[in-house]
Image (cartoon, rainbow, N blue to C red; front, side, top):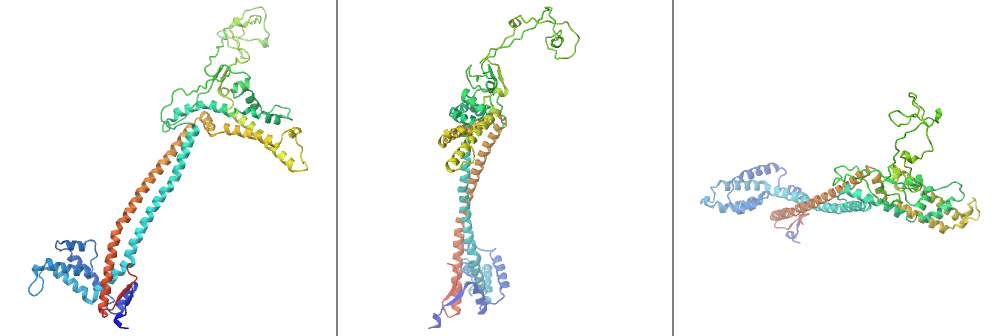
Length: 519
């Protein structure tokens, strides 16, 4: 095989060592390269205005091969300074020709070209590609983050819409909407106990074997419904209901508009139901007492001492003795201006907690829930006993006499009725409105919660917009690196070709391959 046909393969990482080992370039050429770079910087200060030169020098690190191209261009621009002996009088041409001589001395140009080529292959090109990949990853991460933020945003919006739905408001004017929606409470209470009569059988089962009355609230609600606490306590409907005013402590930041000055809520009702707050009360006129002496002195322990200037009762405070007064009990009390309230449904005035209905009163509502939970626990225990009775041949405990009359199916039906009533009386809407009415701070808590939800949604949306813009910017930076990479690859390939040709000339034009170069 002919020696000229044998290729010379040089690995890129070993190119510089290969050139030194073949004594093509000396070991120490860095000082020479620095001197040449200084001369190039000085020569670039005085360059003619030429489009080819501008294009050649723009964004390029000048090397030996660029200097050769510059000299060729200067031969055209400085040809007027050329003498008959072939020399140029232009200082520009002299400077660049001197630079070429320094490059060609000791083959410095080849050593520099090898350094630039190795640096581009091992660092510059991989660095640009790595930066482009990193920009792509960062852009994708921004888009992924935008997608991930959609889940908490949708969750917050769903929770916000659910809370508004539970409250039955739109969220536009919280104070007015809160006051308006509180008027739905009586209807919710009535709807929640519409099937309470189905608990009568369970109450009867609970009461068997007990001598004392039990579950009084449940029994009362079954018989009379959700009446006022006054009627439950006094066994008669009130003549007038003076329900405490609803107080909503909404801060200015949470209240969209100022609520009406009258916060009292009229739940309607009739004269007999005892739920109307518009019924006029009869004024009780006690009149003025004028006792006449009828020669019937009172005993000392029963005497009532009247002040000479008023009709106040003396409850034992010592005073100056006054004349004994005798009371004629035969005189009708109507003559004294006393109006006696009637019996039955003609009651008095329901104030304070007694003006609330049983399910609307905090204390009586708790008692109602305690009773219904107690009844539920009792039925669960009876159901467990029945199951034990069915699965065990030996009865290890005694059951109540009437348990045989109720099977597991009937008890489960009773439990279903209880669960239905509990589900309605403890629904989210009822719970929110109950707290809203009886807790002054609850309105502000709800308003703050709604505001924080929307504030979090706005923050998420702003973050998504920032991430989208950032993703676009990163992708633009990635696109801007494409021409940089293309130019760098092109220059590196030219260097590779020049190095291979230069080495090939030194070895009788044998083929030279730089392995591990640019793809």
